Image 1 (cartoon, one colour):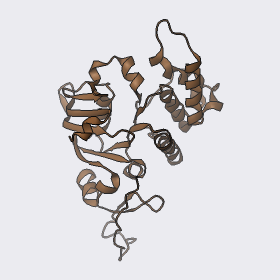
Image 2 (spheres, rainbow, N blue to C red):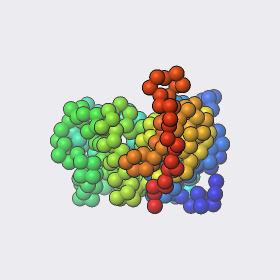
Image 3 (tube, rainbow, N blue to C red):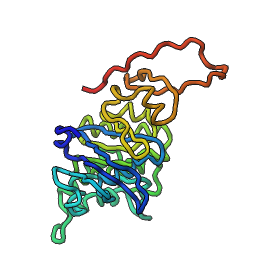
Image 4 (cartoon, helix red, strand yellow):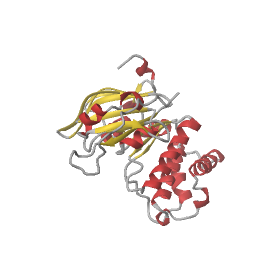
Length: 286
């Protein structure tokens, strides 16, 4: 890991991650650039979510250290971590009979103390989070009444109410239809671009990752195969090595980011006989 990576607020050094005797990832050096929209991708069971859990202090590395603001993340209490980074795990479930406003208000828990009452600052943080995610008008609705896309925005609002500069989201688009996936990712992009949040997402869709990420971490078999700007690291060779997929990389016609196009089988009658050569993908961040 470079010296500059050690300056990033969140990074891990020499991480071995395991569940009981099963080692999931070994000797990982990873850094989340400050102010980045970082996405972790890779095949199923490659260690993506496990890495995110280690970065958020949900699991303790068998070896190595995750550092947050230069200190080992294990040295913080759970509340201290929650005041520095927000985490949205997979498949979050709200208690029955809870309203949107009450669920979002739970994001203020890390800021509560035994003698500290609910304050104007807490109320302002909750209202601001609901405004940012477009759920303020749903404040009095029960969470179980909402659509999948609405519920995901509510969970994001709860995390935003923590008022942390770093947000970690584990597969936030799972179980959503395509339109709601784009809605959630657009919201994440707005938080990154407009408000300067550092985001770390685990995603399954490589094309979505390439479209939104400013920094990509590609994993395979518990190791990091590549990391950097998607425009610089995503190649047909990398996709075949990591995902076992033969493809062409072309510029996304909307935003110019890398777009993975699987190759047709040679015997597919729909296959074009003359394919245009792939154009270089321009860097899109700056």
